[in-house]
Image (cartoon, rainbow, N blue to C red; front, side, top):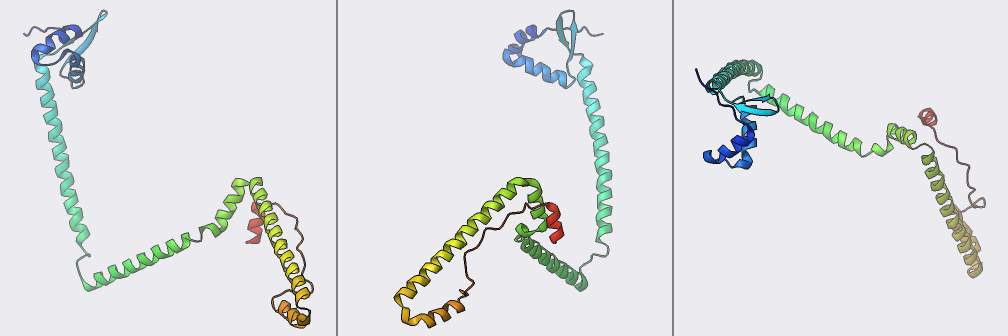
Length: 215
């Protein structure tokens, strides 16, 4: 029969330095031993006591040995299964001219697929699904952006139209004798009699239904 001593933490902190453990680390060391089931802990009244039975360490080592032995058996069984699976997978995959040719063809197809996938990614901005998602997400905000873009484009077009009229007037004033040649030049450039300023069109909000209808 063994007599068991029970200690409080403050008592262990005093005894720790005698065993080479600084008092500030005693609490952490004791808690580690408790977590490893090498030391028992219990609250008696208002105080917490710690103790260890001589058989605790032996029991834990025996339990650990059983667990390791069980893990070893499981690992051996798994190893045998993997070896058998490896041998099974090797069947029909022996090196041969037909296999090498098939692998070469597969790699070529895979490379072609990757190239097409990369090329497709370059056109992601023009994907109808992406366009539809953008309209759904931004809603009225997208309409405002579109309206502003049309306005800026309209102003730029009419600004260049104004520049063309100014240039025509300057040519007429400075080269009156070349009127016929200038008119021919204007027609070749697409500046005909109906050439005029653009009118700003009304902007109709774009909806998802309209996008689908246009597809």
